[in-house]
Amino acid sequence: MDFNYSNEQVALRETLQRFISRDYDFERRRELSRSALGYSAEAWSQFAELGFLSLPFPEEFGGLGGNSVDVMLVMEMAGRGLLLEPYLSSVVMGGGLIRDAGSLSLKQQMLPRIGAGEIKVALACHEATGRYDLSRVECSAARHGRGWRVSGQKTVVLDAPSADYFLVSARSSGKSGDEQGISVFLIPRESAGVTLLAYPTQSGGRAADVRLQNVELAADGLIGTAESGLTVVERAADKGAAALCAEAVGIITALNEATLNYLKVRKQFGVPIGKFQALQHRMADMFIAAEQARSMAIFAAVYADSEDVRERRRAVSGAKAYIGQAARLVGQQAVQMHGAMGVVNELIVSHYFKRLTMIDLTLGDVDFHLARFSSLMG
Image 1: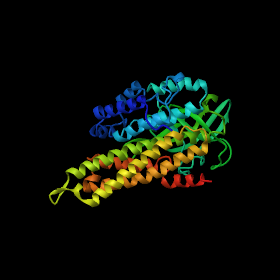
Image 2: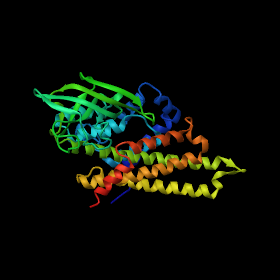
Image 3: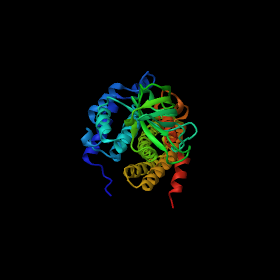
Image 4: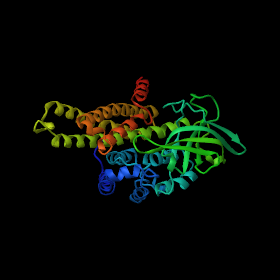
């Protein structure tokens, strides 16, 4: 297998790297996190112009025909820059679900608009009683005339405050925990009966709890086949988890660079603290963890597009579990070696650490993915 990046992939990464260096420094990011929108509308438009938003969509729908490795490159740079834009939710998971399971007419209608930055889509698949189990669905869907009526509540819907549409998993038969009986619906934000409780996340992003009260949908509001939607949602979540792995690698790499630079300039007893052997050993452990995490992120990206469900789940869960552990190691060491400065809001190190913590808790933490990986070992 060839692990070298193509010229196009290298150019993709360098383009985003230049944008972050020029237009998205740390102070700009802090300013955006305090704004009402929570991200940069101008940056989102630029991402559309540069092709990042249409990257994973087929060419016949205005996309660039990219794969999960291409998305990995974008997400790694997003991690280094701590980008706040809803790329993961709208393009990777929301747009990816429509690409993989939507009807031809829906793809023609939605994917070009997502790629152009005109609309955003959020995946609403978690509930308060389900934690990371996507089959724990109590949100209900019932036939209503020729269409559907959906009621229930979804929790921690990433980037919901800025979304124009929600992809909602709802149960039309069976009980919570059953793998069958779950369907996926596309619900416009402005639909009667949709209300949001919005809030900022710990890492500076936005999320919301979405309440659905007798929301009426036409027949074409159903995505894919009725009562077989769990596999569709799980695939979108796996692709999202693989993308989060790449984002974490970008943050880990940036944290290592920031910490090494600090060790070179911070002096104690008249010498840079980087001269102390104990700190050199800790720094070496951090760099080893970063390289191993990068290997696991590549592994997850390569298999995220696999049609073999067990193969995909094993690769993604193995990577998410390992990178979660590596992120904790690097994050804690970076904060400790920066001393009290490591936790102040004015230093980017604390923001990197908070984002790594949020990544671990999103789409399954270390314990969840270790358990899932173990169950797939047979």
